[in-house]
Length: 119
Image (tube, helix red, strand yellow):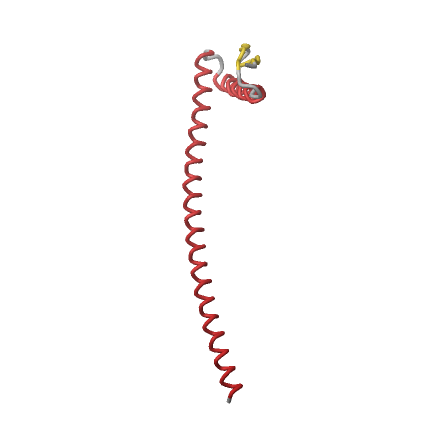
């Protein structure tokens, strides 16, 4: 199992990850380190653990918001799919009705043509 070294808030951590996940884990650690640095700039020296907890809570809040937005988009997508399916069914019914009407018109034209040619 691959291992990488990441630096978060000036501290080095050795982390294990799945094969091929090294860049992703490094990027996540870099993002967390940046978040902690932003908090340190905003709040000053309030303790490492508190900064780490605040950063984790901010990340969790963003994740929660993303999940809520995804759920809303999934609901909207399902609603739009239902509308598209209903519109497709309506269009198919209209096409069928139109085809039947055209068939009746063709039959009338054929009868009129026979009447005119025989008479």
